[in-house]
Amino acid sequence: MENCLFCKIVAGQIPSAKVYEDDQILAFRDIAPQAPTHILVIPKEHIGSVAEVTEENASLVAHIFTVIPRIARAEGLAGGYRVVSNCGPDAGQTVPHLHFHILGGKPLTTEMA
Ligand code: 5GP
Ligand code: ZN
Image 1 (spheres, rainbow, N blue to C red):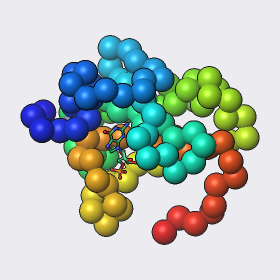
Image 2 (cartoon, helix red, strand yellow):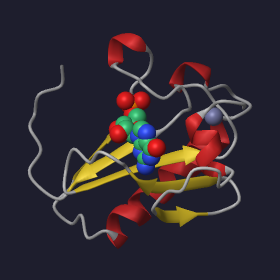
Image 3 (cartoon, rainbow, N blue to C red):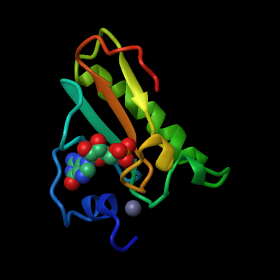
Image 4 (cartoon, rainbow, N blue to C red):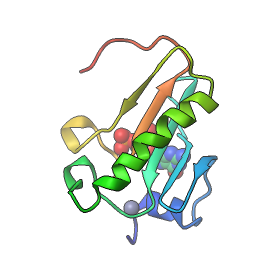
């Protein structure tokens, strides 16, 4: 999608520190990490947010969730990690392309809101 930051990263128009890529998805390091390990996992296809997940694209989301534990293992997050997806303005979503944050590398706070 034109003018979408993460679509531009998928297209290689904006550089990113990639940690995983296949034909369907891409994972790269967050530019402003909020934990020692902070990775974003995105579908290459533009999906706006969790609010746009449907039966038609659900297999892509399922695929993301099979890759997340592989990335976590590769990153050495043996102590655990958090997977977060902000959906919409009240959740603080700033990039309107579906993404899952993987946060770890230290004990995270339990604060949820
Ligand atoms: P959100 O706030 O939408 O849940 O998450 C968007 C995330 O994208 C933020 O954590 C932000 O730091 C990250 N981000 C924004 N612009 C860029 C960029 O150009 N490159 C990378 N790697 N991350 C970005
Ligand atoms: Zn996009």
